[in-house]
Length: 152
Image (cartoon, rainbow, N blue to C red; front, side, top):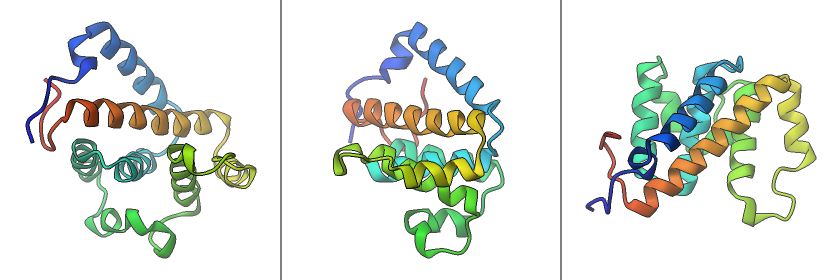
């Protein structure tokens, strides 16, 4: 598949600058990077964004994530490899990504479980990672970004 165009956030530099500022703030939110990487990967798997799956795996591995855990992300509920906090973040990622599947997609139960593991600042970081990943998944699938391609 050939990309239709470059990523729109690259074409409009002010957009990318704003997005990068959100990422910087998110990474200062106190959530382990490994957890944020897992969230990014799971959202991208749900949305079928090959470019973000490829980039997410690459980034996670550079940050010390194991192949064993990466192979289990799609079936995290059946795996014993994830912490309670990671499981709560993954549950929220799935619910917030599949908004059309349920009228109350992020239920109180899902929220409360996440709030048991993360403080408000950390919850903000998790929600931002979910949201930014969904943004990039939609940008990439619309322009048909190819897996392994760089942003530039």
